[in-house]
Length: 122
Image 1 (tube, rainbow, N blue to C red):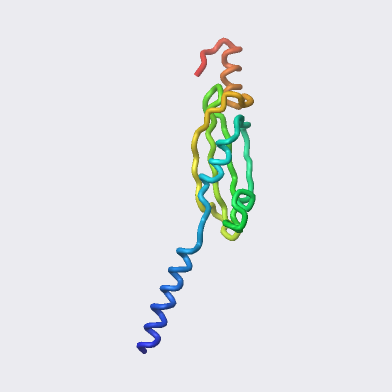
Image 2: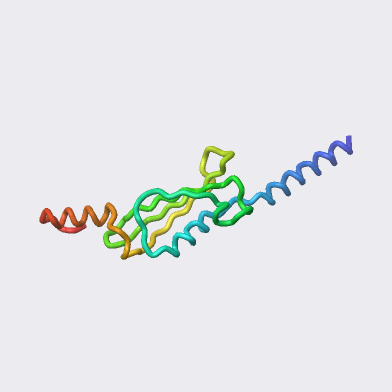
């Protein structure tokens, strides 16, 4: 009976050690690579973590939604990470970038339309 108790403790210890060794990618890696861009365009982009860090995060992919939230180049970027084995997202993070040289998105287009119709800017 003592041997089975010891085996149970060893098995649960090995299981915990295995979970500690599993790494999940940080979506900040994608934000870092996007921060190097001088311009943004509204929409969705996606990729595989194998492109960013080969061999480090197999089976993980990412999606980023880029949306202009303020006129004249303020963009909200939200990055979601997915594991190909799990249907739900693993992690997500978002931030804002100012890219004044970008093509106008929905925020700037709405502002220009409002100004053209004689309205006041938001």
